[in-house]
Image (cartoon, rainbow, N blue to C red; front, side, top):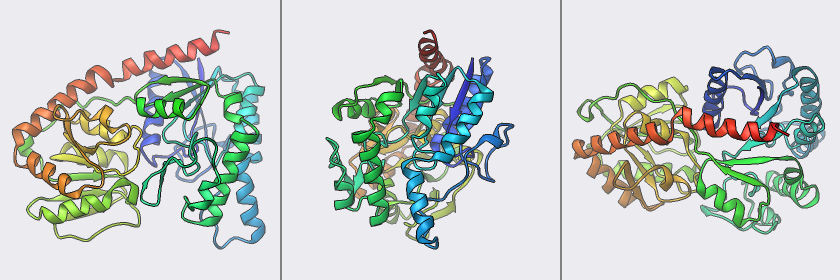
Length: 399
């Protein structure tokens, strides 16, 4: 089977890209041919299909652009004709059996969906965030989880300035009105939506998504060996340094535990310089894997509805216990007292206590990490993921 794999970024940018590239390898290992499509970028992985990629556009970093340029950017967010044209040319040559979409909003836009349907290509879409429901894709505004746009009330994106800049907030509100209320572009064209968490699937139902939904957790490759807890050092945070990721709570907890070393991998505007915190900046996937191999634990102190953060599975595969906020899809991955510890979001005191508890008890941390590895083998391995996904592909192409 020839699979068209679509993700706007074709370089290792974040968790969704790590999943996308692992999926590419998994499909190819099982005899499928993968044809990629995304946005042109000098950081992209090499591919003979790059000539068909859509032109690169920076939507939210256009302060120096002319008024005409800004209007053009907004129009591309709403309906990117260039992306549709490039995909049309690719489909004429590649002729895929199925299209599997990952993240495509803004840079590619839903303009690509009618093109796929016109060529008779069934569409599967794995959701890595809440873009199908929420204008800012995070369900998080003004420091708290937000569901104000439920029931197509997209004017709230402007009222509460959910993007932090009024122009961007107005653009995403208009985008949702156009794509959902006026065109129903997703409902008309997407055959199957894949939710990596039951939490996201439940939100889709609650927000009256009427299309087919399959719950398929992400998969991760299993590490062969993991170190003993006594050989590990440091408490690790991996992610964007933004409010919703709980980096402020992480720093607050670190400030209370000066005898423990903390490591932060990621970039962003928020940070607090502390003598026991090492800031490594954004690092490539292979360095994240190495850091997990030597970490005492991973901390995921998110304040927003995390869907299925890939780094949690990576930690579990490395035998690393995870301390995570009890919110969104995180409790589906982190089993309290079995593979890690759940704490209330926005509670730095509870977070610090849980870190101290695991750090001072290496045997318990090791037991949690070992159990996490067992669960990864049985529930989040590539073989199980592939068979479920292949079944979806086969059902859609059978007709």
